[in-house]
Length: 147
Image (cartoon, rainbow, N blue to C red; front, top):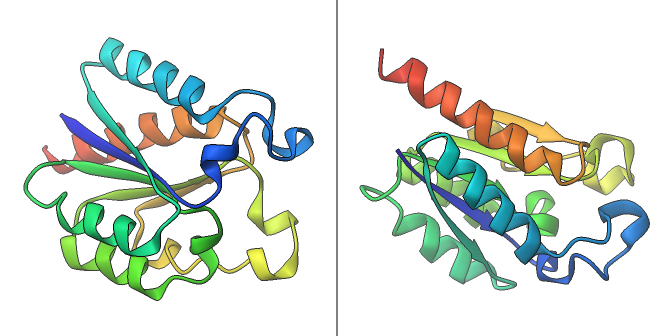
């Protein structure tokens, strides 16, 4: 099973960006741990981060036929990007949306996710553990589809 993890704008700043909300670990630390965890589950996990909306769209479009599932933390694009939402809908790859913080308990503008409507599930509010829960959940979804 091959899964793509996409991280959007500003997530490259983890470790220094608002550590009271996001913790002190870097995105690279989290990705490395997640890749290793995936290996223990028999999963090949590729990671990608971009601050550029169009590059994220390209990555999603190029995932068709390559990946069985996508985990995405689009960052602020979650609330604004119709094109990322449309790319996910177009490729029709099972997707789990993930956020380290509970977007529904934050500022009002963060309560709306454009991505959730085309995602199989959403994991929010567990800090870096959100990524691990998203991976486990996506594996479960993919295993159910193969039955």
